[in-house]
Length: 173
View 1 (spheres, rainbow, N blue to C red):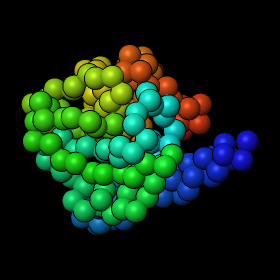
View 2: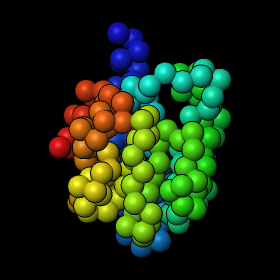
View 3: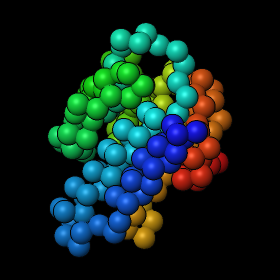
């Protein structure tokens, strides 16, 4: 029960980051990707993953153009989830994606690269239509806040199970 409470607290901490963005476009975009990076990190905690080697790191990948810059690396640096370190990898094309747990596919790359469907891979995007095209989680902005929607059937097809806390936080479809 203490673990569940700790997870709820971590999720609440994320919500505190989801505040209205700065008025400047540059500052707002940086904050938007800080919030998205925090969500990507916390998805590792709130998804039940297929069994993996205990010594293998969690991998958060970015396909194509990287809108995060160093923000994603900074967010996960030195952190451990369930006894496993976290790495960030960048991939030029979908065929390069290997040993990845979460794959972020940015605005310009999802149509060009497509959405890879693999067991144990959580695909996350940020464009309308991403879920209809086979993605599992899609970020969107609403009232200057980062929100996300979840396609539960796609996650289940990849062998992933979302926690009830994650499903309450996002919009499940």
